[in-house]
Length: 201
Image (cartoon, rainbow, N blue to C red):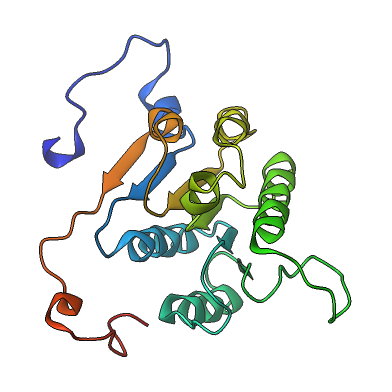
């Protein structure tokens, strides 16, 4: 695709402008580093367009502070671009009201997160969604991949969704408009080096 020009144009009855505004489903998968980072890069472009952004982190612990979270929260509150709502499964979803003593399994939390995503998609709450590490609840059988595919396929409006994580299931990649597989060639951990400030977080 030199200069961003498609190699083929489908005979679908749509104009170029209509085709350019179709919602995108993107999947970043594979064993390599950079899946979430690439998704947050897309979120920066969405912020620049003034789109409301919803980030749902399905696996990362509440103790894991990613640099992109702080940056996007600051940008979202700046009033210059789109708003940013950031939800973490690891610290308890922000919309769930329960006593501090209530324990919830990771599977239940993942299901609650997916239920909220479904509600937000139906209400067109955001224009751009990052479902970070969402492939894992599907891989573990906590969330039904066929239901995810059906919901994404039938979502209203022009809501863009990017899903990250290893082990993306075939029905999801078949649905997606954009699938990128991150492959590892080398990694500092191969040489016994742990994650670094400013690189991993």
